[in-house]
Every structure is written in structure tokens, then in C-alpha cells.
Image (cartoon, rainbow, N blue to C red; front, side):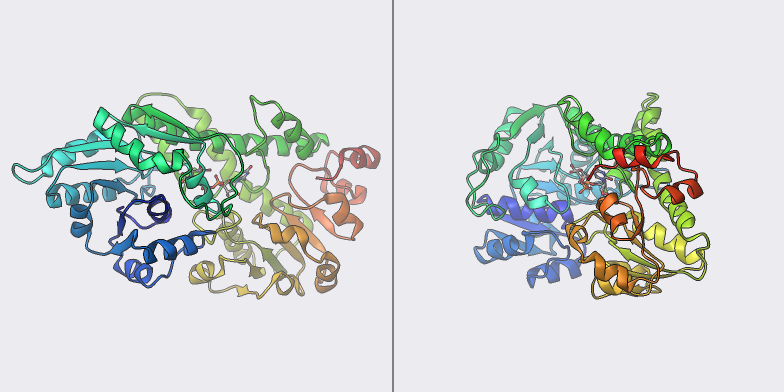
Length: 472
Ligand code: UGA
């Protein structure tokens, strides 16, 4: 396994749990030293325990000697980062470096599996580089594409219980080898750390054998579709606000149509993280370079970028003057159950609030260390209640489950002014207003007719609003 980021660590650890001998390497020697000492550099449920157990059983090991890892392996999974370049294209330099390393260090035939998210046709280039840089008279390489669909926060569960496993292969031998690697997952022949031996009786995963180009495209097409689905829901939410409808009612009914499906229709602040934003950009560039007008992707991206402004506009409407106000933030991570803040909307919102002269206090279960390293100027809190203390407005920016079940009476008493701006539509507007909060969310009519009038919302009739405003 080359690359000990999210995908590399989860893939390596889960394949070790599935009974394979896995050695992981990374060019970040500090990261490898930490992993050898049992310190997992990311927060991901179940990963720590699984990693330690497999290190103890000697199925999993870490080395900073990449050449050694290459020589020891029959199959090499490339799991390095492909961050966006300034023009939005994926930076493939890490893949290129790893390919040259494998080519020059391999002493026996290897299967090289591309697991990093890459644009279509990267596998062909990878094969070419491996051939060009191989030792004189050195071994032939086989290449495959095996995109990963795991989500941060549920990565271990997603890897061990996937909906589908996609293998982009060119030879039967490669297909056989990869089928064997994934056999324990397909046959559920592993100790499941998530369900502790009582896995729900879901369908077994589909194994799809495709060409390499298709496999690569499947990954970008899937992430871009999810991104479009979220942007679509967000536009419907904006429309709901204008016509006095309720986004929760609309998306629930839409999602009951199996052709649409209920997931990824949650409106709010939009998509962040290191995958959807960068993958939609890379897909846009791939389409452009291929001469295909895929402008609907550009629109989905534009809608998403505007979500932060939509939230800031709600803050300005609620507070009137932002300068000099104290704002509390609940949630910094780009989504719940992770400490990842890459492309997290919270960062942009905090920067904008500071630029407008607000003071900011924040709380997140897992992401405060990473955030304080880049935004040291705000106050980090022990718990949500400290974040609410003496603030003029409290913002919910991450969908952590904990925020659904806070003691709102206590929070109201702590705040200077009980104003909540819920960027993830976590709470029930009617219940919050009953508790005396001025409550703002996305695509749900405002309950307070006076405020609706002041803010120019379409939902002017309180009876119509009350009717539309069923519990979320
Ligand atoms: C995403 C994909 O969902 C995975 O299938 C894929 O494997 C992964 O990228 C990857 O390429 O590695 P992830 O980045 O972990 O996974 O996060 P998502 O669960 O997709 O959420 C992305 C963002 O969308 C989050 O900020 C989340 O808050 C937001 N979101 C999600 C919404 O705003 N609304 C929704 O309905 C769902």
C-alpha cells in the first residue's frame, strides 16, 4: 500500500483484517513513525482498534522504506493524493513519482492497482511510465484500476460492506488476482469490527469487471453526480424559501421515488471535504479537454460555492450589523464523524466573520486541533455550552448528531441573544421557536411572521407557514 492517507490506511487495515499480509509505506516519515507507534493520524471510527489488532497479529506493518515495501509485495495499491492544481485538474505528480519508484525497485512481476481518484486514461499512462522506467530487462507490470467509494466517518464500514467493487482490468490473470484479494470481503469472511459479528443481512456487494477507462470514469461520474444532487437540493431549498414551501417535505417525497432515492438531498451549506469539490473540478477539466460540453457540472459547482454566501447573508439579516458581535460555532469538520477540515465551509465562514469584525468561539468534537493550527485567532471551547456563552448568534455548521440533542434551555440562558442559524437543517424550526429562539435554516419557512415580514420572506401568512412547517 503506497500512501497512508485516508484511503491507504483504511484499505491497508481492512485488507489486513481480511487476512492478507499488508505493508504500508508513505514518504512522510513522521507519519510512518507515528503509525509504527500505534498513533493513527486521522479520526475515523473503528480504525484505531482495527489497526492495532492487525499490527499485533503481524498482518499489517508500516515502513518508510518504500523500495522494501515494493519488493515485498505481489500487488501494490497506489493510494496517494491527487490534489487539485490551480486550474482544477488533478495533480498526478505523486502517481508519477510512485510509478517510477515501483518501476526501478521491483525485482519480480507486480500487479499495480490504482486506487487514488484519477481522471480516465491515467491507467494507460501509468502502464507506459512503468514500462519506460523499468530496470534493464526488468519485469513486466500489470496495471488495474480499483476506485474506492468509502466515505469519511463510515470508511471502515463502507470498505468492509461495499455496495460495489469495481475492477478495471486488462487481463484474466489480473482479474483472478484481484478477485482473490477481495474474496473475503465478497464472502464476508472477516471479523466485522463495526457490527461485532452481527452484520445486517444486506445484499452482498456487486463485483463489476470493466475496462480501466470505465473504472476511472465511474469514480468521477459517481462523485460528481452526488455533488449535483446536493446542489439540486440546495436550489430547491432556495426556491422553497421564496414560495413558502418546506425543503424537508419536498425532498422526502422526491426521495421516495426509487429512481431518485432519499440520500444526498440534504440542503444547507453544501458539500465540502477533499473529494466532492476536487473531483467535480477534475471532471469538468477532463470533459473540457475531451471536447465535451458538461456545463451542468460547472453550475453544480457554482451553486455550491454560493452556499457560504447564502449563510453569511442569513447571519447579516439576523444580526443586522456583524461588526462587534460575538458569534459561536458548533461544528468545524466538513461533515460529521471526522476531524477533516479540508474544504470545510466552516473555514470560509469564520474568515468572513473575522473580516467583518465579529469575535468567534467554536466547538467541534474532533476537528479543533486541526482548525486551531490554521485559525489560531478564534476561541476554542470545551463543549457546545461554552461556545454558546455570551454570543449574539450560534451557527451550526456540521451535522454532528450531538448537536441535535443539546439542552436548548441552557443554551438560551447562556446566549446574549437567542439566535440560531442552522447551516445543516438539524433542528425542528417550530420546536426551536417555541423555545424562544430566533431560528434560521435553509428552505424552511420562518415561523415568526414579524421576522418574515422584516426579512422579506415570501412566507407571510402565518397560517400557511404553520401548516408547511411540520417537524423535520
Ligand atoms: C465522498 C463520496 O460520498 C464517497 O463515495 C467517495 O468515496 C469519497 O467522496 C471519495 O471520493 O473518497 P466524503 O468526501 O467522505 O465521500 O463525504 P460525503 O459523505 O460525500 O459528504 C460530502 C459533503 O457533502 C459533506 O460536506 C456533507 O456535509 C455534504 N452533504 C452530504 C450535503 O450537504 N448534503 C447531503 O445530502 C449529503
